[in-house]
Amino acid sequence: MSSVRYPNFDTLRIVAASSVVFSHAFLIATGSEETEPLHGTGLIAGVYGVFVFFILSGFLVTESAKRSAGLADYFRKRFLRIAPALVVSTLLITYVICPPFALDGATAFVLDPKVMSVAMQAIFLHSDGLYFSNIGFYPPPDGADYLPGIANGVLWTIRLEVIGYALIALLMAMSLFKGSRQIIATLIAFGLIGFSVAYGKVVSIEWVAALLFVLPSFCCGIIMNWLVQFHKPRGWLAALFALGFIPAVHFQILPETFCYIAAYPLIWIGAADFKAFGWFNTRSDISYGVYLYGWPVTQVIRAMVGDGLSGYEMAALALPVTALIAYLSWHLVEKPALRLKTATPKPAYRAA
Image (cartoon, rainbow, N blue to C red; front, side, top):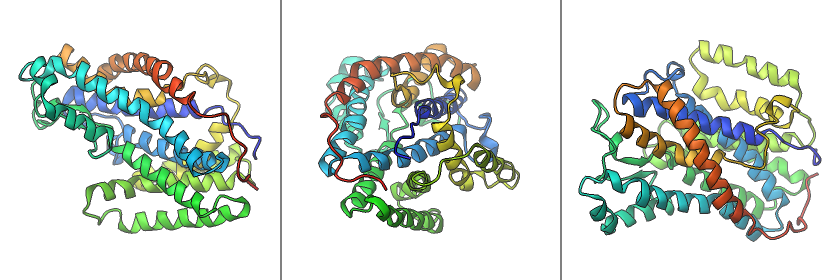
């Protein structure tokens, strides 16, 4: 399967990122997620989008590790993909978007040393979001007093993604991606899924609970990377898995079973030759930018427009603006950073 291409992964990531912006539009517009269309399934569309991100990440980061010359090469690629856009977006949101909404004035906000401290905590993944007590994008809505001060509420997944990178690096350091040894890494992934299922709902430490919440999705990606070495995903099998969504919704177990049902169809879609996806399969990978900028863009639109919009109307306004900013982020920040990668080195080992 080493020659198989996955031309639709960019499209899948854009859809996943857009689902996050879509869901948050309901929360920010109305102060509640109750009108979000998938809320009745137990989770909102944006969380399912996060699951999709982690499935694809587990698959692709495993492949990146297998193609890397060593740990240094692997970490360099991961750093260049995740860090530059995170740093730039956090600083732009902090010092360009937030000051006009500062409660004590823009100048006082910019000069406040605590503001830089909050930004640095977000950049170094010490906090799970970008929160300021001295800004208010709009008056607090009933039952959601916390919303107006959140400059970016999606960063909680970034540090979990980095932990996933560290997990792959550990498996790589143990040479578990060398040929037939990948089965051991796959068994470890199954074990981590079992651990997450057993303890995910009883852990009291917040960040650990969040990690166990997304870890099964990441591990499903690792397992799928092993599977495609000797099995080409089939459309009929993907359809069979997709039918599993029907009983999962009926029996109200979709959140718990989503990653197990979705992993195979996602990888099949990623490799399929869909002409309809051709428009999205460009050299502009805007998904990360959509994810990073969707929340602050929606907050600003809510501040400018005021009350009265539905979640659908807010999403219709936020998504195009976010996509434009994400396009600029890709071409001005992310793509130039990725050019800093050295020429692809000869892999230290190859997949079986």
